[in-house]
Image (tube, rainbow, N blue to C red; front, top):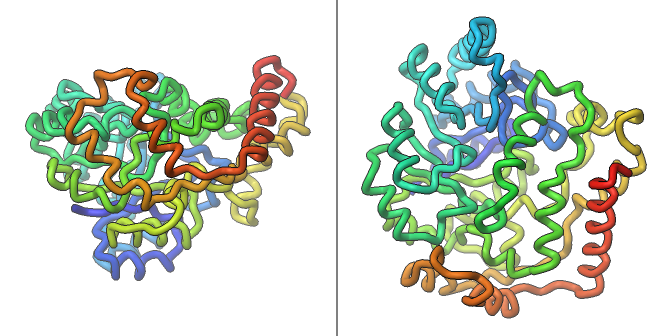
Length: 390
């Protein structure tokens, strides 16, 4: 089982990754022609020169680099002659600096790259929502070397995972420490927002600083903390189960995280054990990215639009991105996964099963008073946002 962590372009990660036996990392520029799965405002500034230098350092340590081109919507102009030329120019630069693999969510983009750059490895993003055999076969048939299966929908459906494994010969990857809502109805909309928020064509447009999907997701978990348990994360202790199914690679997030967090997560999955709070491995529920010299321009570009939004909302929004103070005792989740191996959860209704609710009561600890305060704050902000007061 291979581990595929992100890089935040800190060269200090390289030697650490080499010591852990990491063969490949992934990342991207904060803004480019295609965009990706993270908004620019949460990322550190990385220049093309810095990225090229980092790729070189990785290669010197025997580590490959996977560049993300995985926005959910690449824009209709990319299908024009001029659009293709712009894509080619950017891809020529990626190939020139030695990128080994690219990850896409668009069939058109995959075929375009395969035709012009046959030596590049092609990976399919989780944003493509591959969660059944038919979708996996489609991507495999048009040339995918690797498929990242859709994390909100599939990871505890072992019957479906085995069927997909039997149906395709390409590599299969799962994201271990993502924590989207189970069968998330916000997933597609959220991915569109992230893509737009990292594309050069929208970089100077107002209105992108509030991620409605992120806030609504957090609020829904406050209403029902068992949603933390239903999320399709994979504990370090349970990696072997997915190895037995035939999964080739465990992907780890998040490239927005500081170096210490990336290393702690990678080491936990490398050692296949974690003592403490499960949320320490799930960066989506840690505090938002800090303001630094390297990313302050991005944040100002997104947040400072006084004629388009209420600037006081920016300060309220910063409160909403902080940690919500929940502790999930990882040790109390020992054996949790066995029920899903033995039973098909996808044919049951959660409100009738109640398994995750029972586990949540045993494993989750939080301050009820603080939770109620955070719940009210989120509800008020979402109400104001919907009514146009933000």
